[in-house]
Image (cartoon, rainbow, N blue to C red; front, side, top):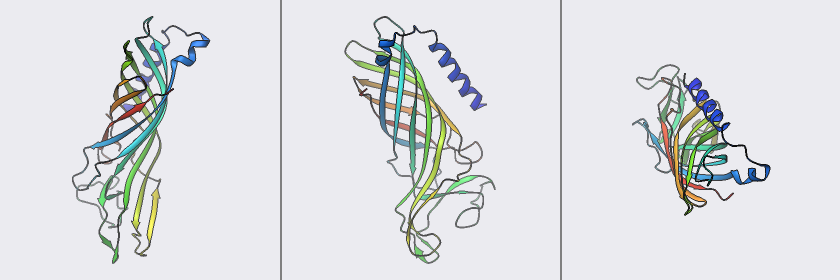
Length: 242
């Protein structure tokens, strides 16, 4: 149902753009804008049993194509593409079912459910010395919406973003949990129950090529009933030099 709804939204956005006046060849470049953003993810609905980091830096790049809605160019509809990476730093590992270092499920967790569990200070008699543990998810995004510009070069954007997951992995840096005593860096790309797409509204307010942004992800990172329903509130800066 969520997938069908997102496809309908994209279809309506693209259909609406087809009614805009077709640009001449020389104006195409002026209607294209290329930019990037840096942001911090404030993760919502994080399980109380784990300790997340306050700073969860992320980055995205995007391209927009605008369709003017008035002769002076103060209002426009845009559609584009982009790619963005979200990070969730914590002091935990991600397990699914009985696959974790304790070989037992936490209370209330289903046999096929994904969950976070804290890295112990010691395991197999050796210090873990945790240095980094994070979940990273990268999405290929389709943003669309409306942009309003004033004569003073101030601008405001109200949009919506739908994205498909192109990568998801965890990264652990610390003592070898197999008990060898060595420091290791381990990545796991075989994650289960990560939702294949995300979506949510976003807004940007700024001046000329610089702005402040906020994005609220309505969808959860994990499939419903198969993992913690965490979702990011992304607050950051946007730069549109081109």
